[in-house]
Length: 117
Image 1: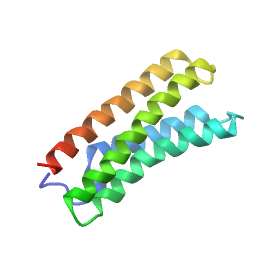
Image 2: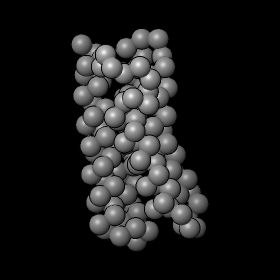
Image 3: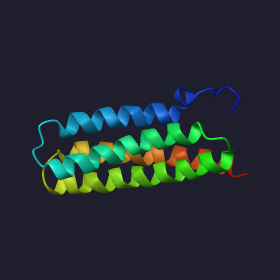
Image 4: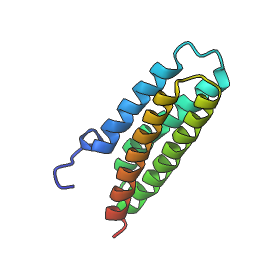
């Protein structure tokens, strides 16, 4: 953690940024505006809550924002089940995105644990 000077240095933030790009690519052209908006917002929430928490003045506050980011990652996973069921994305895409969001959640959880010690 000593090498981290800005949120952009955090691997989990960079991965969340990649997830947002993938979400936007997956939803491009989807006419279900409500669904598309919800999935995009959940993805952006992961990335932004990591960044916002990093900028807070205490580890306790940072951990709280990481908790929110982790919840949003769960929402992304849930939305990809719906996307698969509604045939908005191929099953392989949904599986890949859920696994990526799960990995991000795991990384967030590890950082949360470190901050709460």
